[in-house]
Structure formats: C-alpha cells, structure tokens
Image (tube, rainbow, N blue to C red; front, side, top):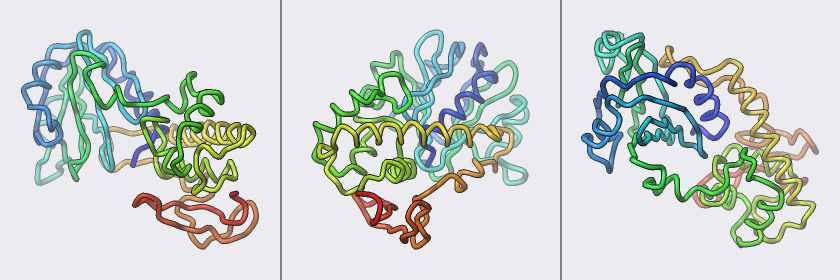
Length: 279
C-alpha cells in the first residue's frame, strides 16, 4: 500500500507533466473507481478545467483545478500511467494485446494520465471545494508538515488510550503513516507498539517524533531514486527493503540488539517489532 513517501514521490514526479495543462476529456472505463460518486460528477467538474497545482495531503494526491479539485487515493494497489496522447490511451487502455489496465483517464493537449487499480479499491473523486470531501476533512496533521511538531504530537498522544501502533495508523490523528512506516518508526524510537499512546514520557515523545520524520524522509529519498516512471505500467518502487529494520523481518535478527524480530497481530494488521529493545 502506498504511504506518504510513495505518494509524495508520485506528486513530485507528476507536477511537471500536468501542471498548467487543460483537461480536454475525462475517460471513465470502470465507474467503480468513482464510487459512490456518479460518473457525471467527475466529467462535469474536471472537463475543460486547468490543473493549476498538484499537492498531497496524507495519502491523497490533489489535482487543484482552476475551479474545484480532483482527489486520487491509491488504497492498496492504485497507480498512475502516462500515455503520449489520446491515440495511445484509447489503443492500449484495457486492450487484450499490449493493453494496460486503466480505470479513469484525463486527456490533455499533450499526453494523457491514467489511474489504474485492477482490484478496484482505489478512488478518483471530484469536489467543488476541499471542504466538501469528508476524507480530506477528517485527516489529522500531515506527518511531514510544519504542523507536525513534538508539542502537537504530545497533545495527540495524551488524548488517546489506544496502542501506539493503532494510534499511528489512525489517519485522523497523524496522516500519511501506514503499516510499514509505523512499524519502522516505533523500532527506531525503541517503543513497544502495544503501549498505550498516553503512557509516553516527554523524552519518548521526542524520540517518536524524530523517528517518524527521519523514517519518512529516508523512505522518500529512496522513492525518488529512481523516480516513478508512469510510462511503465509495471514500474514500482525498488530498494525500500534495504532501509527496513523491522517490517517484514519476522525471525530475522534485530539490527540493534540481535534478538529475533517478532510478528504480532494488532487490529487485524501485522506488527513487526523487537521484544528485547522496544520498551
């Protein structure tokens, strides 16, 4: 599942391709990607509108138009695909030979951008205003924004009795963290993922904040080298496994103390941690 670093890398790569471009046509190949909105809403709000800016909030990609905006959320497997123009888009989208799965596409004067998710969890929505999106409105502080301070994190932790891992996954508290980077942040901060959020001492809050920022920054660096290649429908981020210290390493030695990394289940998700050095 793409988390903040992957989505930020997508946004930075997408900007020079689409900012300033006019959306001439919206192609909806699989309306399920728009649910619960009707196809007509996206077509009406996006057609003949100019993309003024590409932003990110949490795990959302925001296409800010000269009037309104479009939100893209990749969920588990969503991705973007770039075509040279309408001819290539219509010739390859969902075709049997040399085809590329595409759910929704935006056609420009130069090129076309496709949104694809074969499992149909990802979503493309159109809004007249950011305030109309309940998903955006419910997001907490962005984990890499200037609002994400040690003091603010301390306040949020003090209000919650949930386990630390569940707290970090709650997008209404801290937006952008998913399962992988939550595990990594807790490992770097040496914190037990089962502890209640409000139990952290000031020094532990500082460690956690530093860990979140450093883990996301390192992952973003990795995601930008090499940058996303939207022209390759099979492309995906490479090399992230080299920076992982806990996630997906069950049974392997902790790179800090040597004890075996454990896997437990929390709220239906796998948590990877070191029982010896995470307290």
